Image (cartoon, rainbow, N blue to C red; front, side, top):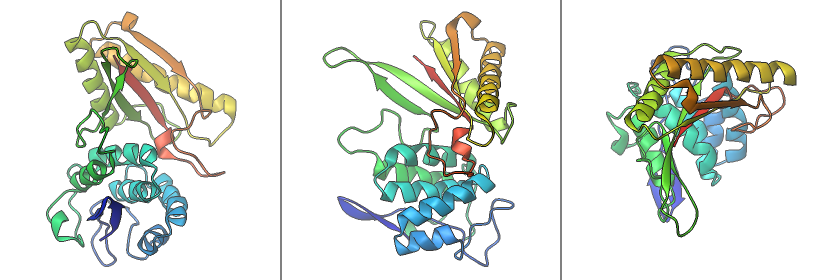
Length: 259
């Protein structure tokens, strides 16, 4: 349906069309959704603004995550598109859209489409060490001329104003804990974050509670407490820029790195 020029034009995404039955309960995406209309017109700045609001109002909607990721991707901001696509792979792993508008995407899940978008958008010369379809991002760390080690980053997302784990969050922590147990020399850093709704002091405390939640869950999964270092930043270091008064689900996160 949409095309992104990356050396050559390639079809990218899908969206729920008007008149279709939503595959995700409560998902408002339709062919008349303002963000989708802007995306059709190539007005990516407006699409980002509108879809950011939609993404905040409908947390964990893979359609919103997919379309917002595409809007960022068209702006050349794969740093912002990538976490949205990877979250869509989790949230849309089993979600089959009622209708797609490209032949190549027929019978694919939303998560699979997100993977295809991501594989197109990753730099060809220096692709992410993670395969595109991984829901976690594996990054390389080190200095030039020195053998590099690998750090696996796991994002645990939280519901608005909550510090309790969702099922998706529990799965992320289980994966991180398994990696530590499979690699006894590895350690863990945990960084708690919050969106910008509320006061600075409240969000600092909330991000602290979220970091504690992830640490405690990893300990419960068998990771020694001595291997886990936690910190928290409230809303001071957002993953995604937030317009004033707009709550961004991607900033309600605890970033866990294993290396």
